Amino acid sequence: MTATAHYRGRFAPTPSGPLHLGSLVAALGSYLDARAAGGQWLVRIEDIDPPRCPEGTDSTILRQLEAFGLTWDEDVMWQRQRHDAYQHALEQLIDRGLAYPCSCSRKQWQAFDIYPGWCRDGVCDASQPVAWRLRSDLAQRPVGWNDRLFGEQHFDPADLGDVVLKRKDQLWAYQLAVVVDDAHQGISDIVRGVDLLDNTPWQQQLQAALQVPTPRYLHLPLVVTAGGQKLSKQNLAPALAEESRGIRRQLFQALQLLDQAPPPALVEEPPEVQLRWAIDHWSVAHLAPQPHRSAPPEP
Ligand code: GLU
Image 1 (tube, rainbow, N blue to C red):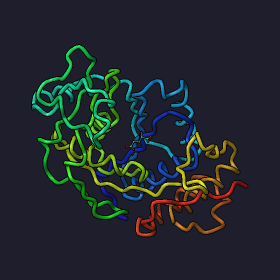
Image 2 (image 1 turned 180 degrees about the horizontal axis):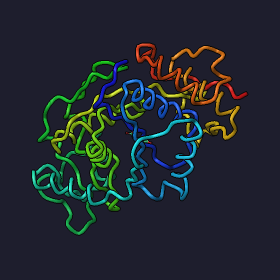
Image 3 (image 1 turned 135 degrees about the horizontal axis):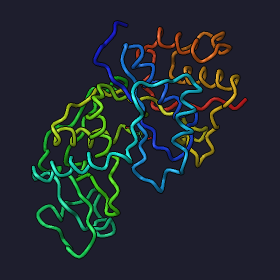
Image 4 (image 1 turned 90 degrees about the horizontal axis):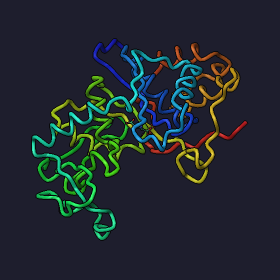
């Protein structure tokens, strides 16, 4: 493929646990898409929710990426250092009348599918702590994109509700942080697991509200257990290998899970050789648009 000078991709793990085969597939897919386009590939640690992120897991993830040959450009960004940028974005939305404080608890609106917007024109209970929400009723425009794997996606703004931007416990919401940081880092292409596809319409509403560009989207298949569940710490996803034989095998498996059909002999090769082959042969057209791939059996 010819170089696309403006391509900037990213891998944005939440450091709630070390990477496993499922997260390796997401990292590898975004890496290959960026490198095949001659673009840059950045890493951002999404540690906005400290109780969910055990100390040291971020360094473990960075070491794992390096061991698999997935080297990044520029400095790693940590979301816990980005408070001022998120606050600035929230203030912009408040100034434009697009964000409002909300004292309602989930219990109060549990009879509804989405929050009905009771605090839009004034906070219901000023004695309570507040969250901040986006006014989706003022962003009434069709939300949609042409996903590079899953095709045309359309969402009715009326079904999305007023997404939380800052939580009652004062932590920033993922939706705000991810949009502010993707814009700040000039990300042109988001390549991530299909489990995040449902989040994209909120992120697009926020991009419109903050007047920042919308990237292209490629959602990748998820690696699932035999029971059809996303691999995770909870269902004991196999850990990533630390020695060279296991690393070669798992990198090769990740290429297979991305439908790239690597030649069998490639499994014997070190990461840099496997990655060179994979960059040269990367083809989104080879990806089947089914949302799940079964985890390979453990050796
Ligand atoms: N931090 C999110 C996760 O690890 C991914 C965010 C994204 O790629 O947009 O699930």
